[in-house]
Length: 583
Image (cartoon, rainbow, N blue to C red):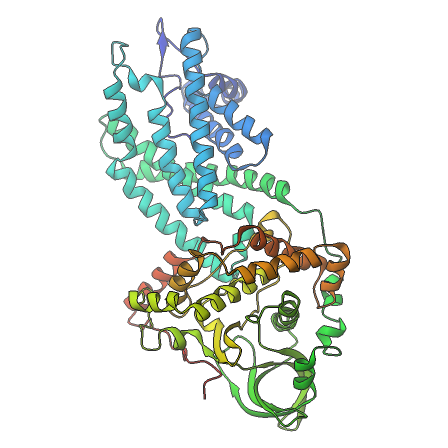
């Protein structure tokens, strides 16, 4: 998004006549005849300049958010065309063209870096706005010339710094970021993390935030340079208008980007229902642990409230006389239940295929009798206690309070627990789960060693539609409290255990074939779900570590807590933070 229109009709004059850039001339040639047909000459001039400004902004912004060599060439061409001026000397045109190319390179490089850093769209957009206005000032030839046309390098640097670090512009940046990040965070929560994969929406947000910061910052700097009286309404109006134009351009760029990254594989309309009717999903086949839970005698003890799905706690007495604590989730007839059941049963099967000890508790479909009524659903074994109580039983239970350094050091130095935690994360991210707060991990010490297992995978196994679905992302680590954000950072900063990587590599080698993928579908997965699983597993096999970054709705969560506090409500979690398995 252009910040300073330093190459418009008022920037460079020869013999009293303004010089236009090539992009100015092209846009004006399309806009001016229409405006002059509709408006009076005086009004037409104003309309021409305004429409040209926003048209240029759209033309220069859209290719920034596209992918591919053609889009990159278009971005370079638009910035060169908006820098070099018609009728100028060839030396000045060459210099201006080079500077325009530099602006395009700085913006595209910054955008790529921010994408790899997995920033929220609002934060990425604001940072792009700051980079844009800095590049616009720093890479504009006229800013390094004094009023007599002589080179003044110091003056150009001073103008660049004043433009980049203008307190008013930075204040607008902060306000824009806060508002946009709260809106994005709410959408993140409501979509249960799915918005992370919506390139159209993300680029709309990025470009809108960039345009808002650019437009308001541009107007503020213009007022400052012109010694005009401060006009807040004009600043906000320009920011809103540029934000809307930026959002429209970002949406166009996002649509092209989504098409560019789209996978060719597509599930049939009946693929999901067929996946949920496989013998493994229905409990007709399974391993010895699943058969024991399926055929044992279920005794309910109590219904558990405050969960997203109806859940009963109870025990199953196996044919060998073992009594195993379990959860039973009855079929509620809604999609959320069907997806959770499919995900957790298939997830248990995937854990066996990868040969992970740190996977999921045993899960299998079956019917049970509760209060004289037969219910179909699935059971899941309860194992261990939640990781919060294992790692930091007496620590803070607050959203934004970090654990002590000693807790993190002890966790990192406890090698069996640390490596089991890493492996559990690999399994969870191969599944593609987004809701990854610490209460969704349980730990248990067994004669074979320490294990960490995953529970609550109601949002995993997203069908892969684009390249983004083939990359593991840690999702939401802050939940009812804060600890997993810090534990994950420790785990991501260390390489994965060699044994874990070797198992993932073996899984990829075995199942990343047509026959292997068909076998995985037998667990209750669609072809697109299998494609996502294999893509994420392949990422781990190649990188040998956990992904370090993923955007979280932190600003929204903070604003939510602040709102509750100002309303006189206790923002502390009312959820019992003890494991369902604790006796």
